[in-house]
Length: 78
Image 1: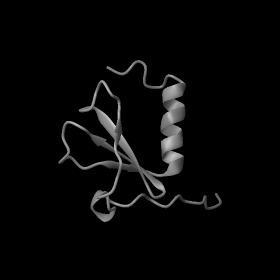
Image 2: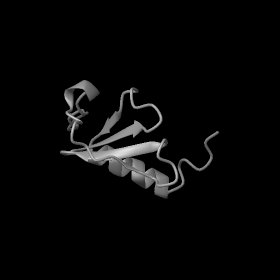
Image 3: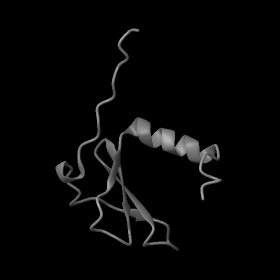
Image 4: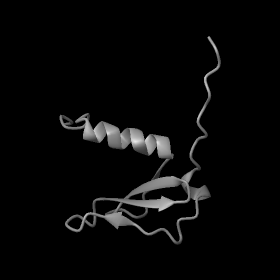
């Protein structure tokens, strides 16, 4: 089996400077999910728990998430 190219892993939350991040949230749910575009990464955090570690996605990971949402992959979650 040939070696498949590997995507670089996103940095750990403590390795990414989020100081100047501009967080985006739904106007009617500011304590829900928030996202920020930081350099080449997309960062997601919980607006109601800012001390929780954020999730960091590469561009490809974020696109896969958006595609899954658009295709209804999350519609039947409990």
